[in-house]
Figure 1 (cartoon, rainbow over the protein chains, first blue to last red):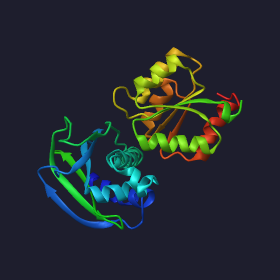
Figure 2: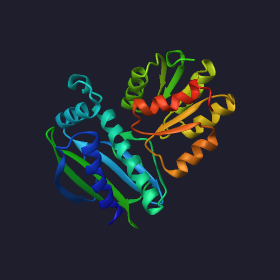
Figure 3: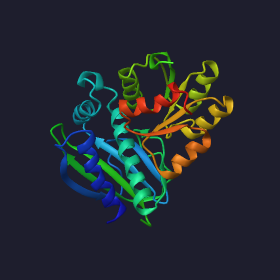
Length: 149
Length: 126
């Protein structure tokens, strides 16, 4: 299994464990650029390198972040990007721990950055976008690997 | 010393992570809790107001948690630092211990895990 596939397989597990079991695979697309509505980015750096990101509508982001955090929906407005960056960081951390334990691949993470283009020095090539449906709306997770992955 | 007497510093760039850790600490009886958002702020806070326990995330802007742990432990050889992070790889564990951390909790840390980690502080067992 490629590391990209491993990432997405473990992502569905993370969604089920930490947010809700209603999340399910919806679709996947390939692109040469990041979706314009990506609101948080985080680099995986080390023996495997990739840029990860999250995108979804404001409505879905508010609902999903409320479900994830347990904070009232009205209080999530304006901070859903911070809340969902916590989930991205949590999942990415679990992923690199599994890479270390299962395939002796050592990595770390960069601090999440918000909005705009990914502030990354990673020379990425292809962008993989996987959409997940849920009772709270659709959320997209993005991973862009370097050419050699 | 009781849990409610402990002076605690939480350092994490994630608002939600700080809230979850604060909630977990409150649930087990801790009351005296300060929060900061990056490693440098943790060092500055510790200098001004030393605490009994510092909970440090690793991946943070400005200054990462392992660097902050090293500087706090250099400042105070008795500092009790507990890392709380999602990046619980063997290398990060080793670096954290080398930096002077006494314990490492993989996120998300439960109140039970937090209480277990603090039991060593209260018992003076470090």
